[in-house]
Image (tube, rainbow, N blue to C red; front, top):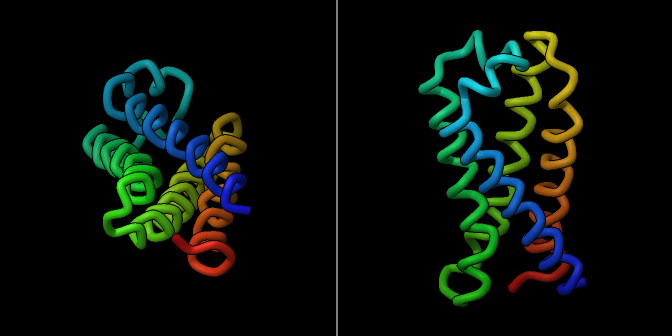
Length: 122
């Protein structure tokens, strides 16, 4: 179970950092195809992107260096909550294309949180 959790954590961390970077640096490109990106302030997307990058880092670093490993499941919860919030934005503005991405991230975050809180804590 520990190996599976690490694999999911690594994949989720890559998605978080990649998606967060895109929200920060490529917002104009995203706004061309995603209505929620056009309608909501760029500053909000920059904050969400920054949080996503920090969550991605917190999914890996504490467990690797064994300092404050309890941050990992909390970061996973934050990923799940943030993904559900963003999916709400997408649904409200009628964006269906990015929904699978954020729903999968929410499920992965919930799995890692459950796994690290209950099944296999550090």
